[in-house]
Image 1 (spheres, rainbow, N blue to C red):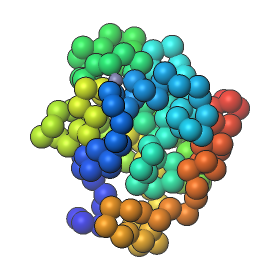
Image 2 (cartoon, rainbow, N blue to C red; image 1 turned 90 degrees about the vertical axis):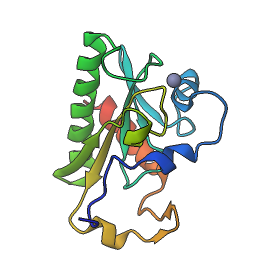
Image 3 (cartoon, rainbow, N blue to C red; image 1 turned 120 degrees about the horizontal axis):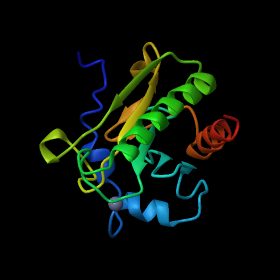
Length: 161
Ligand SMILES: [Zn+2]
């Protein structure tokens, strides 16, 4: 099973963010650009690129409210998050010509949540054999696409929906 990436083990990736306060609250406070990587703002939640993606097109859906779990969010926000996650897969299918995704939420420390205080859904496009062509050196992955290019393509995807 070790050829399959587990979205439940994202801790080290998210923890490599070294900034004060909550990274997701900080990101949404900035102007949207390839800097904060925020691609779409909904009413209660937004879509952002993972700064340390597992594959190109690794997105996250995050509520604007700083809340650590699903049950404290209101039903409208939960519904919107699922709708946005679905839209992410639609866009990623188009951009990357894939039919495979990992989608997951880590809630709590033992589950491997890196940003404990602010719940988020990971959406990761997958391809057959993708762990083979991505070289891995320690915790640094070499991706086939620059983050700025992914940002542009995903943002355009949302604009054209
Ligand atoms: Zn937050």
